[in-house]
Image (tube, rainbow, N blue to C red; front, side, top):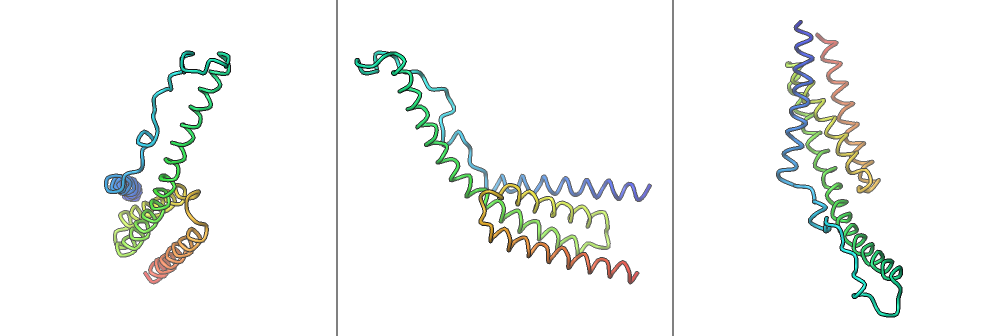
Length: 167
C-alpha cells in the first residue's frame, strides 16, 4: 500500500509541477496570438462595381481571391516569424527550468516520491521544450543543450545508483 501511495503521489507531484511551470511560463512570457497578427474574420467578396469595367465577373472573383490570399500569407508570415522566436525562447526556458528541477530532485533523494515526481516533471518539461522548439531552434543549440542535459541526467543516475548500493 505504501509503495502504491508513493507511486501515486510521485506521479501527482510530476503532473502538478509540470502544469504549474507551464502556467508560470505562460503568465510571465505569453505566447503570441494569431488574432493579434491576422484578421480572423472572413473577407468580403468584391462587389462587381469595385472591379474594372474591362474584366468579367469570373476575373473579378479571381482578383479578389488573389488579393485575399496575399493578405492571408502576409499576416501568417508575420505571426510565424514571431512564433518561431517564441518557440526558441520557450525551448531555452523549459530546458533551464527542467535542469533546475532535476538538480532539486537530486537533493530531495531522501523523499523518493517527491524526488521522483520533481525529476519526472523536469524531464517532461525538457521534452516539451524540445518538441515545441524543434523547428525554430538552431540544431547546434539543440545539440549543445541536449549534451548538457544528458550529462546531468547520467551523472545523477550514477550518483543515485551508488547511494542505493551503499545502503
